[in-house]
Structures are given as C-alpha cells and as structure tokens.
Amino acid sequence: MGNSWDEDERRSVRDRLVELISVFPGVQVDDSHGHTGFLLRGKRFAWLLVDHHGDGRLALAVKAPRGEQESLVAQDGARYFVPAYLGPHGWVGANLDEASDPDWAEIAGLLEQAWRMSATKRAIAEYDRS
Image (cartoon, rainbow, N blue to C red; front, side, top):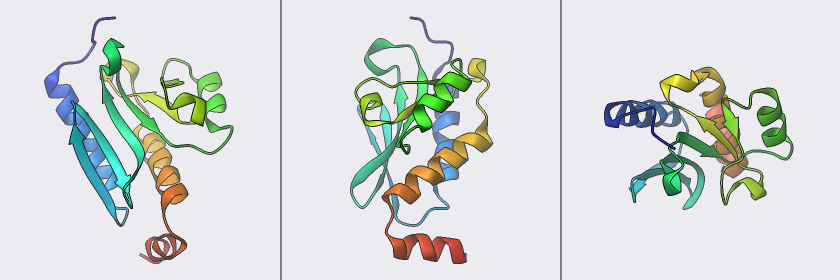
C-alpha cells in the first residue's frame, strides 16, 4: 500500500496531536522507531503510527471504552479502523492523512476520552476545574 502523505504532513499531524494532548496534565510524548507515543504515568494511551508494518497509514491508535471501536468503524470505515495488535484490546484507529479528511474535533474527543481512562481521579478533577 502506498502512502498518500509525505514527511511534511507527518510532522504537521504529529505537531497537531502534541498540541491537542498538551492540555492534559501529566502527558509525556515519546518518539521512538518512527512513531510517537502518548503516555500517562508510564502507560501509553495513544500512538501516532507511521506506516506501521508497511500499512501505508498515517494514523492514530487510541485507547477507547468498550463498544467505541465497533461504533466508529461501522459509522465511518474510511476514517476509522481496527488497528493491528491493539484492536483486540478495544483500541480504535483513526486515519489522519489529509486524504482521509480527519475530524479533528472528534480526534480531540477521542484523546480526552483515552486520557480520562488512564488518569487518576485527582488529575481528572484538577483538569475539570481548569
């Protein structure tokens, strides 16, 4: 599968995700092996996957509550997919290349939801007060 995106688009998408995620307390950004992980208390809750195992995608894999993955994939299979390895654990994949026309407000909501699933009650209360 060929890439519909280039290195500039990859950097732009990464920067946009980092900006979206920066509002949540305690998040660490970890770049390794060409991918970017978003961690809270040492555990990943989202990944920017770049051509993961040659799949040609520029995509976000994000932790999601039970049922969310199935709902999003059924609703919009062009934007959302079941990611390799993480999909069986309920994570959802979202294509972020321009050709897929990502809904950035929905991406922000998915990131917040994943952060809330991983954060402590204290961190959530602190965030909700701000």
